[in-house]
Image (cartoon, rainbow, N blue to C red; front, side):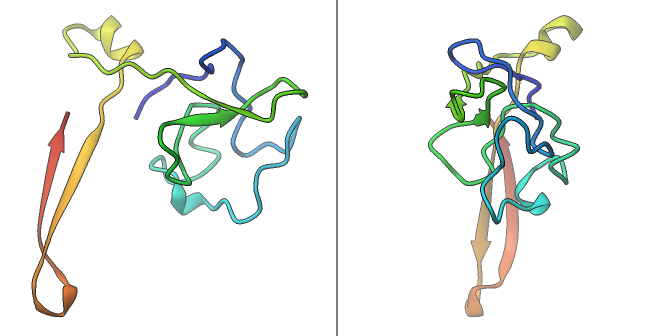
Length: 108
């Protein structure tokens, strides 16, 4: 999971567990976050509602939310690992009765 906490215009992200300056949408639950909870996601850019890309609520009272610019790169060093994030594709193969019988996880 990435640790980007600024939007495409450079605004600081609001903590997902905070109601200031913006109250998050009703129905946003902890299980929608790969971190396990809104609190664990801190103020990092996430995509809990399956938008086209990651986003966050901003600390700017006049701008409710914005997309984030998350770059994906190869992790060649510890310092690069702090600024890059990985995206995983989870492929499920279903058998009869639509029960998953095999899972492949691919890092892109």
